[in-house]
Every structure is written in C-alpha cells, then in structure tokens.
Length: 302
Image (cartoon, rainbow, N blue to C red; front, side):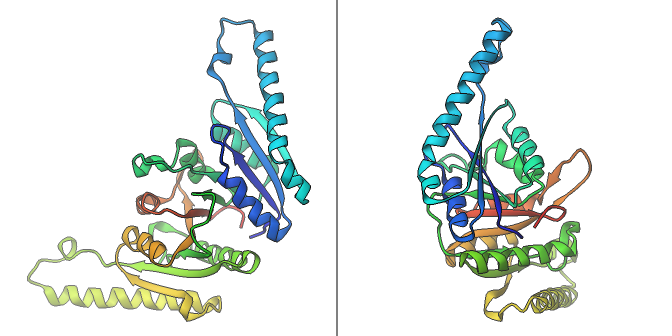
C-alpha cells in the first residue's frame, strides 16, 4: 500500500470534517498529497420549469462559491505546507461522482466521514458509504470521529478463505497494516475468529463424540492456517490473536477491549454489474464497532 495520494470526500452538510482531519494526520507523517472533493446538489435547480440557461448559471455560481469557501477553509493546511487540490462537482448520486473521481485520480486511499448519530446502528453508514464500501476499487478509510479512538489497528484475517475470499487478500491486509504501522506509528494487531458450526446444524444429539472430534479438527485447521499465515510475514506472536467465537461478536469486543482506532477488513467482488459484497458477517461487525474502518478489496490497489 502506498500513502502518496489521498482523496478526501468533504461533506458540506456538516461543519466538522473528520475525514479531512484524519487524512491530514496521515499526510503530515507521509508527505502525501491531499485531493479534496465536494459534491453539491440542490433539487430545486433540476426543475424543468426554469430556463436552462438560468439553471446552469445558478449551478455555476453555487460551484464557484463552494470552491472558494472550501479553499478558504483549508488555507491553514496550505500554510502548513500541505499539497492540496480542491474539486467541487455537481451531482445527484454522490457515490457515482466520487467513484468517477477515483477512476481518474487513482488515489492510494479514499477517506470519508461516517458522521455517527444516535440513530439505529445500521444508519451510521449512509447509502453513499455503503455504495463506496461495495464499489470503491481503492482502499476506503471510513472515519468515525475527528479524534481517533486509539493508536492501534486490528486486521481481521481469514486464513481458511471462507466465503470464497482469495488467499491473496489476507496478505494484502497484512501488508497494508505493516505499512500503516511503519508510516503512521500505529501498533498492528492481527485477529482471526474461529467458530465451528453449532452442534444442532451438524449432528444428532446422540453422536456427541463425532461432534467433539469435528470441533477438535476444526480448531486444529484454524490454528495451523493462522500460524502459517503469520509466519510468512514475520509477525510477532504477541500481535497475533486466534480467538474462539463468531466474528461478528469477537471482532467488536476485541476492538473495545484493546482500544483499537482502526479496523482493517477485506472485501471481495462478486457477480457482475460491479456489485460488491463484503458479506453479512462483515456488515454485522460494522454495525457494532465505534472506530475507523479501512476496507481493502481483493482486486483493488494496495
């Protein structure tokens, strides 16, 4: 993973810009370029009742004013020596405008704020965020709060490649985590959660010994695969954690107990039409964590 060109989505509806703050922290340590993108849209300026020339002039005025305001708001960063580019665009579907900019710029990381609220956990991620999780071809860093929750990161690994995840994805997650540890000073932890299928799904209650043998074999396979993966990257054993339980329960608990500031997870592309799923387990994990999230694709950069 490179840390040379960072694309930051600016949310004009909020005064605080956690994504910009986090990206600036990264750039401060790495010398990366900051590319800011703000998407404007007002339904009233899409009406067919108004003259098209007037509509275009109104949009151009809004874009110009927003560009000037955004440039002024980051003047202190320019004064600090950051390399900053500002882009303001008009678009109804924000994620499509963001993805179009990603395709041209090819950033090393895309930053976006999640702006958590007290609403249902699923609503912590807007439709735009979910679309980017599924479709961004570059690593996506979703920022939870302006201040990071901790100075550690956790990479959620899957050495047995469940859900058809390619073996290379775990290596990408580890490489990215080691880069972030070296460049940003984040202490990396590596986690794998293992849980055999419940007894009720596999065996009749009378064949208890067969189930116990299955559990023992399952545990051994997970341990061997995890140890092999860790050994390939010279990771300190103290940083490697193989825990019993379902991922959607183990990962959020580990994040809380170890004051993790950034959770690194992998995603896989499935089917056609550019749809991308990270799986129901991953979505349940995302609903329960209160830290930053870095999503890395098996077929993307990084």
